[in-house]
Length: 115
Image (cartoon, rainbow, N blue to C red; front, side):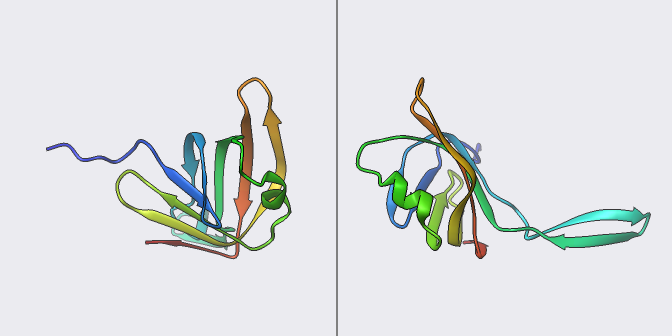
């Protein structure tokens, strides 16, 4: 029997539904490791994040999103899992592509959890 593991993802920022052009990228772990020599590794924390391309839809306060420093982002995946990013804020450029009304953005946050 087949199981849903990928497909439509739903994203909300501070409770407001954001329309997406594709998927959402989130970390599966809060650390990354690198081998120093076989059997020995260093481990570094990574900032919790969400990367996505949104559609610039009417009614969404894009300036509020651009300026906010304490949002909550919730991504609901097709397999039923949910990633919650707390204390979220936009990092890097937040640009609009006029050809397809796509807004590319990345959020970092204070805490990211899987539910």
